Image (cartoon, rainbow, N blue to C red; front, side, top):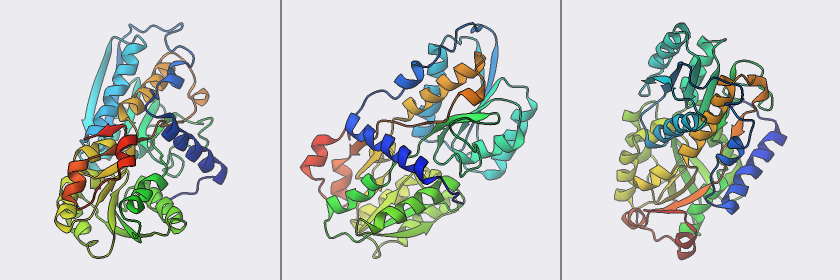
Length: 338
């Protein structure tokens, strides 16, 4: 479900993300908090109703919601009622939640991840919608011009460069020739990432081997299908695979093959290493945008933002279980060590 991004935009986004690798662990909320104050001229004590629709239970997405609420509290919104709904990976449920929210007369909706945001954007053309943890907002049909959103939608993308993650396969094994990616072909964000990985891999001397799973119960079989065919397995930004990550970890441990990840929590849960963003910071960026909207700023004046400060995470115990040793220079440069 890849949609075309303008080449110039993609280059700019990659530059921003790669700059974060150099910048290290700084807070991604700084640029948002330096934007016009959301409380200027606004009644931050009035009763606010916000619906939150989340695709699955997952620590990274949970952290984004936590950050969103924290940012609104920081901006002075003290009388907020949240209607928290979780689709638990079921697409029919995302549509039901979206219809409910459209009828509830909410002040704002937060979409957490691509499928849930797509559902509310389809169902509601008037309530302000802010998204977070969406990889490709243009390709997903959420916005046409990220610089000046034209409808009732803006938010924060977690688009990240795939090259650093793929490079880990070569750093673990210089002779590595292939990386398997487990993903749900029904998630547009995942299709976008896999396509980007294919384009990047050629110049790195790697081949991408796909293994798809339409739901979490199929993830283990998808991972097993890669054994004997790849030198490493990666999970990058796919909600279905991340939900069943422990089954992939088990497969990698048994086969002695490194598991690479596109988020910090997956490394904590058993991937050998990975690059990712702080999703609480990502949620705070979205929360600052919401505060601006609630304070009267038109959505067209609130551009889509992108995650910052890409961080390396390593898990030496997990790496050992997968039959690899993390190079000392990677361990020394890692922001997170588990």
